Image 1: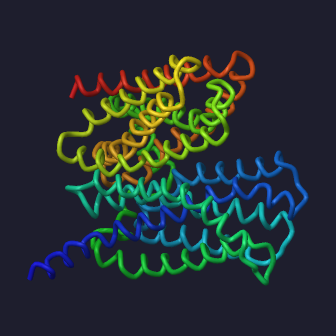
Image 2: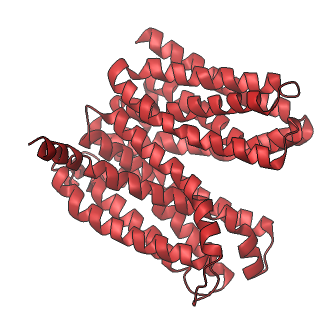
Image 3: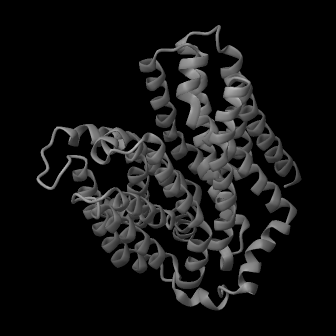
Length: 406
């Protein structure tokens, strides 16, 4: 009897496992491209600047999909949008299996951006409905799965490098596997999840028609002062996180004087800190979201300030502790942010409303590396990172204001 109860309880998480695994695949595909730039350059004879521009295109398409995917989920249901997204990304991955011109690679990257961009906004909405009493825990698992996509991708690239592939370069084997897994996940998701979400259907169309008036429902969310303050909070955090992640390795080597190997090791630890999401997501369901938001952002603020202050005087262990603490605060914030947003947005515009916020925060995240990179060349890395610390400190202060007014 106990075994059967355990099996039934685990079966209740099938929606979470499928949704999180698709998100893992999406992040795996995204993070597989940068380590392959050298191979792409050798295969196609193009510069890093060209490859970087193509990767920027992938990210811009990804960002542009946040709002429309949410609106489509409000209109047609989350299952159809997520299924279509993973199938589109899988087909784009399979397009890279055979030898083809460079433009095919660029086109596949853009299509992958569109396919993977259809997932996160809609997945948060879906999981909040599937696990209303455990939304924080579910989003913690989702974000942790995604973070490990970035950890696994470089290892898989190293593994396939020594494997002979009859259709061309060995890296194409990675996209063959990813494409086949994506199609299988899409089929499993489409068959299994609707049975677990009887309320998720196209019936939302009546309340979220995509028209001038319908889109107005999403933008009016920002007229609510509390919602607007939280949207600004998450935009400030996104600016800090993306700017920090983009230049942390260079900061550690050029400003802190660490070796490349040590900097890489500490940088990996930054992502391994994403395991904290499992804890903070669950805690937010128990103790409330705003206390966790202020706590996690406060940790990130203090840790980043300490990292800057200790640079030049402290050794790698101390700097590593500060860096990991930044990761704990930053990663710990993410599932709580998603849970708070889904509790603040009306159900009939949940997808598009979250899409609006994610579009804003991703736009802020997209410009952060450019600003930090420029400022680091003009004034140095410490002033650039001080700007990031000020941004996350401002986000912490806004969270405290919301908590006090709750």
